[in-house]
Amino acid sequence: MTQRVLVTGGGRGVGAAIVRALSLAGLEVVFTVRTATSEAEALIAAIRAEQPEARLEARSLDLADKAAVDAFAAHVAEEPTYYGLVHNAGMSYDTLAAMVDQDKAERLMQVNYWSFVKLAGALIRPMTRARTGRIVAIGSIAADVANAGNSIYAGSKAALAGYCRTLAIESARRGITVNVVAPGFVDTAMLEPYAAYRANVEKQIPAARFAKPEDVGAVVGFLLSPGAAYVTGATIPVDGGLTAALAIQR
Image 1 (tube, rainbow, N blue to C red):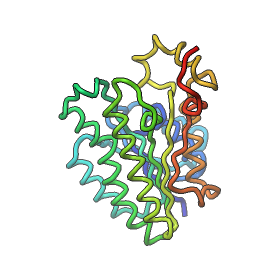
Image 2: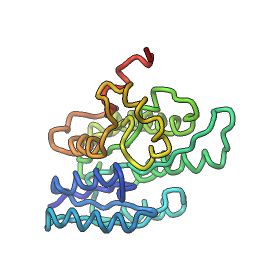
Image 3: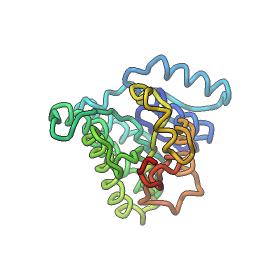
């Protein structure tokens, strides 16, 4: 029987790379999109062109809509048991820490954090009964390394990491692993506003380049593979060595 995985925000960028990696690994993938409908259709077509037997489905969901997330979580909880959950969807909000707009901050927390808590809570119960499951949250190195103007985004990713560590120790005896993948700078549309600074940033990354979405997708693929059964409660940076280096320009 094919194992099923739910991926949030799978239409483009890192999410699309995750959907592709999991599908080509033989998993059945259900993924959510908010606006990337055409990209999702193209992604499905491309994957099926490479692997005709691939089983995947895109579903529309706005993670900022709490009622919609609640209804979606209740629905997937009643479906055949999911083996995995990958929370990739996220939004950013840049402002100085002393100038935060609470409404915008709460919307970000709903997308980045609370929607994951709701979906994980819904899916971990059937995983517990099956005594197997894999949960992965896409965090960020921003949770551990401060960057001016990034307080709310960083806070949401730190909340994800803290929640996942606790969920990991609570569910490990039942065969469930819970981990965080923390990318650094990834070559996606989210970083397009910072294009003017790219060359300077890349010089400070030991690997001397931004990550490709596939770099993140491959790590997620490993965490859902049989070989990662003993990896839980971990945060794995995918940042080209950036957080291992001193943040001093010389």
